[in-house]
Amino acid sequence: VPAETIRNFSIVAHVDHGKSTLADRLLELTGAIKANSGHQVLDNLQVEKERGITVKAQTASLFYSYQGKEYLLNLIDTPGHVDFSAEVQRSLAPCQGVILLVDANDGVQAQTVANYYLAREKNLVIIPVINKIDLKNANPEKVKEQLKKLLEIDIDVIKISAKLGIGINKVLNAIVEKIPPPTIARDKPFRALIFDSWYDKYKGAISLIYVKDGALSVGKQITSVYMKKSYEVRNIFLLRPYAENVKTIFAGQVGAISCNMKSKEAHIGDTLHLRHQPVDSLQGFKPPKPMVFAGVYPIDQTQFASLQTAIDKLTLNDSAVSAIFESSNALGRGFRIGFLGLLHMEVFIQRLEQEYEAQPVVTAPTVTYKAKIFGSKNITKYQGDTITFNNPINFPDPQIVSEFYEPMIIATIITPDTYMRKIMSLCYEKRGKEKLNKIIGNDRFMLQYVMPLNEVILDFHDSLKSISSGYASFDYEDYDYQISDIVKLNILLNGKVVEELSTIIHRSQVSTMGRKLCVKLLDTIPRQLFEIAIQAAVGNKVIARETLKPYKKDVTAKLYGGDVTRRKKLLAQQTEGKKKMKMIGKISLPRDTFINVLKR
Ligand code: GDP
Ligand code: MG
Image (cartoon, rainbow, N blue to C red; front, side, top):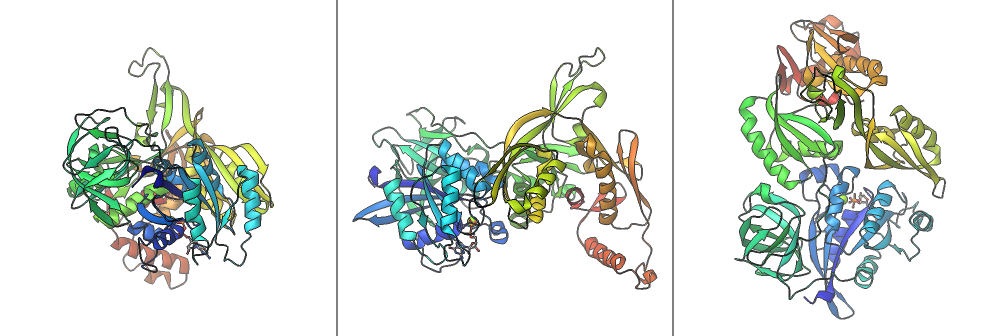
């Protein structure tokens, strides 16, 4: 394939604006798949099907004839949720252009803006496309105005219906016409960027590579610049979108390779070269940084090894996840895992369950805090240091801390003006400070708040959706640390602190959260043979208390059918009882207690 006929591009969009549908149409039109061969070919993980979101970027190489010439179009599908902006970044590394897809009804949303800035930062050609023009309430002209106003884009927009297959050719033509071919050098020694990797049961670690210079053939010896390891190339595939074996891959192409690489060695952002022909590393991209941490433990210790194997494999599939060993009194041996956000965490856990049949106990998610330690004479260990911690167990004794710091984010929210006031008070309640409040046309506002990350990881997104009936959209990026008055809120069951239920919160929320947690636990913990005192405390000071009465045999009979909600609760508890329980001392807790108590 001549270099000038190659186009590398991604489709970026707010979630649900039709990226996967458009990707499928592009595949059909270029003959890579047959029409109606099933919905959303590129979304091939079970979680993606269930949740309808693209979690992991998938890639396809397509051939398209334009004015009598064959072009190779490398499409890189990207995830479309706030938690996965790091994956979007990664997908953009081999690209020279993006299709910025906007729903004709929904208009410009928070992720439209975020993706636009990401693409602009990387100097990519941006092709704005308005989708779903078939919808009854579609208003492409209004959306075009929004795009112009907000993004300062003053070029033609393409109007399409991905669902009905209208205008897809215009998109393909624009890709060929507007996006430049990659700058590559075929006569130079082989050089490629690893931009994704995953684990395959049969072939082991697979790396998705973008070949910048030279060529690579099966059987060659290659070396990674960062990891400094050498391998022999076993297989090379093009993804069309199904894997197609080839002997050689050339500069400008995107493909997958397998070699005797260990899972842990496939480092996204690493550069590959021929063993005896070293090259400079390609400019990679910032490795994704985990923001939210949680403990993940086997339900019983005999399953530790299999949980470890499952986590290892999933981690390879998702380099944004970091996992380190940890152990706790109540939960035994397990892992502290870092995620990009809560959805990312939920997807990861769901995949552990579905793909590896693991049933882990997951503790409440925490962000990474910092504490500056007093330079007191009595304390020598950390004197004058700043320590970091992302586990309530490691919360330092406040007596030795001069200042605590918590991580902040900038939230971008786009909303119709009807919901403005409610959203502003939600942000205020979440300790947000307004940074920007700007009209972007059609009664629509863009708000920016500086907020503690801790406040958005659990249920901010859900709250925002519910108070705006789904009309407000949200995206965020990180924004340094700020001094903060945080405390550790302990939960005691029958007088004993259960570290795994403890959380770190702002002092202003102590009494509300204390009460809320106790009530939630009262609802969640099934009755047992003995009474359980549930307490929330900061240090020695008890903030709230609830008492869970003991279980009596035939307990429903005693309710005389009077109290329906109580009975429902009991029945729910019976179902819960069939689920796996985790023993904390003598008390058994449903395995999802740790996370669920913190949610609304
Ligand atoms: P993604 O989250 O951006 O990948 O969006 P999907 O491709 O999964 O599409 C989200 C929803 O919008 C699905 O229910 C699609 O069937 C629907 N959709 C996509 N394109 C169109 C379109 O052109 N017209 C209409 N009416 N619906 C569409
Ligand atoms: Mg999708």
